[in-house]
Amino acid sequence: MKKDSVTQLADERLNERLARTGQRFTEQRRRVYGVLLQHRDHPSAEEVFLRAKQVMPEISMATVYNTLDTLVQCGLVRQVKQDRGATRYCSNMKQHHHFYCEECGGTFDVDSDGVVPGLEPQLPPGFKMRSLDLSLRGLCPECSARQRRKNRHSIS
Amino acid sequence: MKKDSVTQLADERLNERLARTGQRFTEQRRRVYGVLLQHRDHPSAEEVFLRAKQVMPEISMATVYNTLDTLVQCGLVRQVKQDRGATRYCSNMKQHHHFYCEECGGTFDVDSDGVVPGLEPQLPPGFKMRSLDLSLRGLCPECSARQRRKNRHSIS
DNA sequence: CTAGGTGCAAAAGGTTTGCGGTTAA
DNA sequence: TTAACCGCAAACCTTTTGCACCTAG
View (cartoon, each protein chain N blue to C red):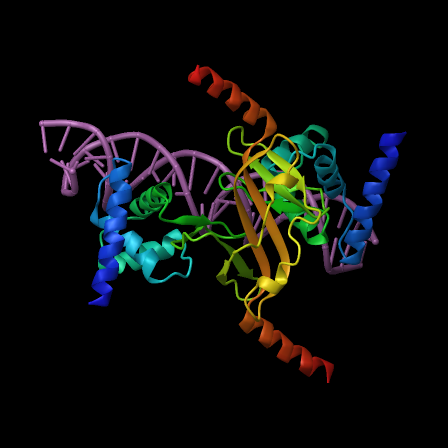
């Protein structure tokens, strides 16, 4: 019941955005968007492909790439590029930033409320800023704790 | 005279950093570092390759990649990833950020003095930040001016 | 002398494209 | 009906790797 209303909301949003740009509502787009909404763990195109495939065995990588592109253009999904490896995708469209753990490689969303206030005035004259993207790197809570434990041992 | 003292300084710095990590000073590394210092326009590996090749025709892409990696590890060069296209390289090691022009595709350095103050306290508990990277997107002064000109026409 | 570096060619990702057949509107 | 979309396979671009030879220290 609850799940249905969630997917229905997603469908409506998707449909609306597609319609707005003269694009069609297809089962593949529905599925790919669904995958991104379900596990918000920043999957790569390949991971999206594998997950979508479980429900839709005939879907192809090309379609996944095309669809992800479409969703990005619709403003329903963001691309996230790490230093190494494939592009990842994120359906959290709230203004937020990403924290990359250098130990485990995980990606975490970080709320950005008021984090970077009034940046534009500091740009050299003439630059017109449209968007900004802040990437943080370091240790996630788990890896940070593990490291601390290790250090304690090596000191004693 | 002035140029010589500049390259000599660069050589010394390179030599010192390489020695510190037990790596050798080679003509290829000197050349690649020189290319990055000369035009600070954020070239891709291929552009570095082409420029280095003019002076050192036998150099290979593999060496350029290896060398760029080495320089990054020595802390003499930064990697810069745009949304699309190849990784770019930057020899400006002052703490700064990058502005990408959505119109012409250019990359510009933006000084970051005091731009992102006191960020760490706002991270969720447990996260240990080691570094941060701010990317800005929008219009560079030139493209911004061109756009303004175009708009004026289409309005009148 | 020898560990580390180089050049080459080939492979390995990751992503895009061309095309014939399919489908939403 | 038909423009948009899909699936497939092949191409593409960027980066990495294995290996024989070379060279700085």
